[in-house]
Image (tube, rainbow, N blue to C red; front, top):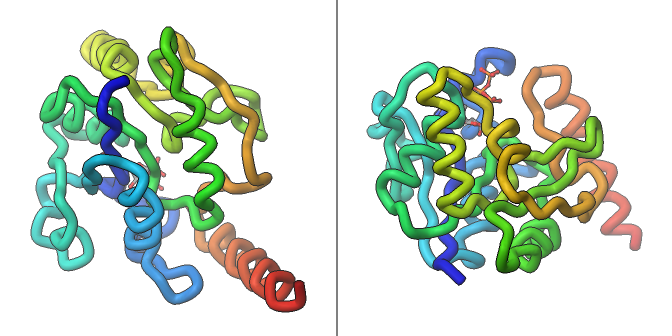
Length: 202
Ligand SMILES: Nc1nc2c(ncn2[C@@H]2O[C@H](COP(=O)(O)OP(=O)(O)OP(=O)(O)O)[C@@H](O)[C@H]2O)c(=O)[nH]1
C-alpha cells in the first residue's frame, strides 16, 4: 500500500462565517490546530493546504504547508497542489471546520483502505453521497479530479462518485458536521458544552 500523507484544508475565505474558520476556537483551541493534531500522528507526513497570500499568516506558517497553484476553484485547488507536489502518495484530506471530528472516525477511515479501491469516504448522513473532505484520496482519484477541473467541472464530491470509492457509514453520529455560519457556530458551542457535561457526569 502507498504511503499515507495528511492534508488539512485551510485555504478557504470563510465568506459565510465572516471570519477565518481555521482560527475559530472551540473548547479553547483553534480548529486548525485541533485538526492537525488529530491527523499528524496517523500519517507519515502532515501538511496544511493554503493559498499563496496566507503563507505568512501566523496561524498557518508554523505548519509544513502546500500552496495552491489554481485560484478560485475552492478546496479542489488544495488537493491538486498536494498531488502535484507528491504524486505517488495517498492523501487523507480533512477540512479544518469539523469541530466534532474524533479519533475513531479517522481510524475507521484509515482501516477502510483496501486493494482495488481508489478512495475511502464516509457516506453523508444528509444525502448519502461521499464526504470529500474527510476522505482518503489515492492518486487515481486525484487524477480524476484533475481531469474534471481541466474540463471546467470543479467538484471533489463528483470526483469521488466517479472513482472506485469505498463508502463507510458514519462512525460517530454528527462527527462530520461542518460549521459555516455564526448561527451554526453558536449551536456547535452548545452541543460541545453538552458533550463535555455528559463526559464529566459519566
Ligand atoms: N487550499 C484551499 N482550501 C480551501 C479553499 N477553499 C476552501 N478551502 C478549505 O476547504 C474546506 C471547506 O471549505 P468551504 O466551507 O467550502 O469554503 P470556505 O471558503 O472555508 O467558506 P465559505 O467562503 O463560507 O464557502 C475548509 O477547510 C476550507 O478552508 C481554497 O481555495 N484552497
